[in-house]
Image (tube, rainbow, N blue to C red):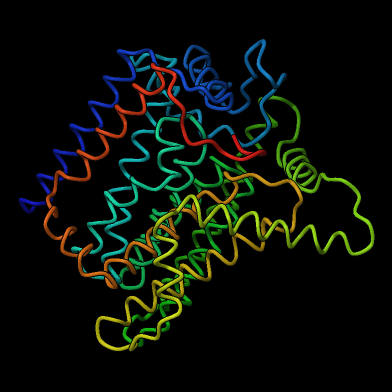
Length: 400
């Protein structure tokens, strides 16, 4: 391992240890009800037989009752296992969320480095921690951090499998993880990977033939996992899972008031405006750089071909997220969570290229321990703000 990589690894391990120790020492519990529910469910599961983990029950007195079927139960398994290994059960879900964040911040620069310079890619590890959405989800027990990590894994596997087919296993791992964590929301995983490969065609040197085959195998792994989950769930409960879950999710998403003639079109337009506005804000200020860069024409040769690939991928994926969720009248900030980081990363890279002062700042603090230090400082600040009851960045109605 190179000295820089070794220093970065040590820094992130220290940061994660500090986060885990802080959570345990403070007995932290989040304010939002979803995080409290999920953390308590993971804690209860840690004391239950593992055979029942596929069909957990909601805790007594929570805002949902009966068997948990809002999503597959995959989110709870790592936290329940961590608690069973001795970590404080009520904080295990928050500790895993911190792990997912750290891993994502390590891997996003690795993925970005396949398209842009190393210093630009490395800067993303601390720039993305300063997004408004990062402050909102700093210490949570929700699905979103795990979902984003799985998506980044799938994209990284897709990129690497362009040259070595064996990395399709990483794509499959990411997509299967998305399925077990967030159910039908995992459909955006293969779509994003496909957009990555289509965008790669903007660079003639980026062969993608092997990667398409790997992506097809990864999707097959998702299907096999869904069938296995159904079988295990039926074996444990005697009831189906996917038919109930999908009908419920689509029914909730489509729920809304009846629209007068022409009102449906206006509602969809309002939905588009809602999600575009959320992306502009939760990825601020880099969305401004993204918009500014979109209006400039840059030569698509040499090192700029990688930027062209990245820009096409970000634009295509954001378009899919916004249009897909705008079809449904039930809106929530969390639905397009990965889009905030895509917009933030694309905008930050654009800003580094457009503004020399920002680039010089990033180069001046390009040290392997800086991202981990930013993580510790912001994480501890969030814990202290919660203790002191200070205001935090809120989600809009329909959010967590």
